[in-house]
Amino acid sequence: MLSNPMHRQVLLLATAQALFQSTAVLVVTIGGLAGSQVSSPALATAPLGAMFLGNALVTVPASLWMARVGRRTGFIAGAALGTLGGLAGAAGVATSSLLLLCLGTMLLGAYQAFALYYRFAASEVADDAFRPRAISFVLTGGIVAAFLGPALARWGEPLVTPQYTGSFLLVAAVSLIATLLLFNLRAPPPPAAASTEKQRPLLEIIKQPAYLVALFGAATGQGVMVLAMTASPLAIVAHHHTLADASQAIQFHVLGMFLPSFFTGALIARFGILRVMFAGVGLLSLHVVLALSGTAVPYFISALTFLGIGWNFLFIGGTTLLTQTYTQAERGRAQAVNDLTVVVTGLLSSASSGVLLALFGWQKMNVMLLPWLALAAAALVWFARRRSSAAAQSA
Image 1 (cartoon, rainbow, N blue to C red):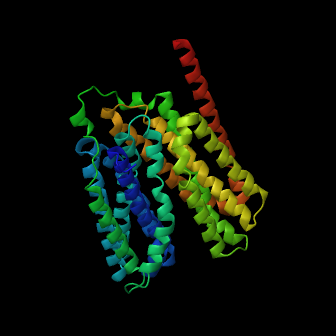
Image 2 (tube, rainbow, N blue to C red):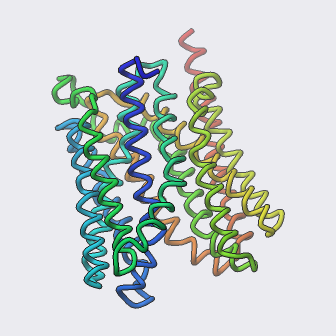
Image 3 (cartoon, helix red, strand yellow):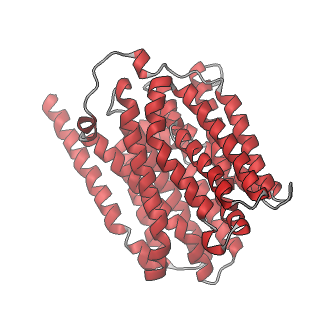
């Protein structure tokens, strides 16, 4: 594989994904703890909120800017923001400044906004035959992050005083490694330099049935996954299980999200995008069934595992379908709208999960996901029939 330049570039992006997601998992692990250390309990989660805000604010500008300057420049700048964010976060903890800590995590959210486009960059360096596998393979970096992120948090905790200062310094170090790695990226030139073709109005791109189905599929996977995942640790502890049980369930969930990436691309190549996305909806529905089956630890672990796999199928399938809806010159705007929608859906799901869990409980909250999943399944069936009808008419 490594003798092929295309494969080497995809491997580089997968490595960059592993490094980025390790920093994200680290910050999610200790962000609230660091916030409670430098502020009141009511503001403990402010650093995590700042990270999500930075992600949302930069997602669109990052895509539009990379459409002008290219992936390599954009990704290097994003990782450099991660380095600055880690340093600012460490300074915030060291000086007991919540504002400085939140500035650091906001910069890390900006890093995340750039890193969201690694999977699209993989689609751009790959040929048509390898494209689904390339997108899928980049997300396997999450497997490394599932283990490396928590480990870095543990290693950094006692490294420097005050507590958690060392963890943010490790974030800066890992981000710097990613910055240096990305200097080796050889992506296609930005669309402005590669093509002079006329671009369609943005609304015309979005109104395509394929675009809408791709966007709705990815947003459904993200929204359902974040809603259930965010609430699950609280639900597990509320049902008289331990924090260790909750941690184990989340680890199985993260592995479910990323381990299938080794073969999701091959499944898409063999069975087609829509069938894999439909399977993703089915697996998310299976999560609901398992959540309703019981509240013992094995039910939580199995439900969250299938939640992760379902997200993987819908997210990779939606990304692959989306790449068929725009030209190279249009990719910046088309990808920006898609990823902003996915990010905002995740934010809303995260913000509402605690409220829904408190009002309805774990099982009823999951039942409320079924209409959303039914709508996603209906959209896929509608689009499959529309595509088959168009193919029959053109034959």
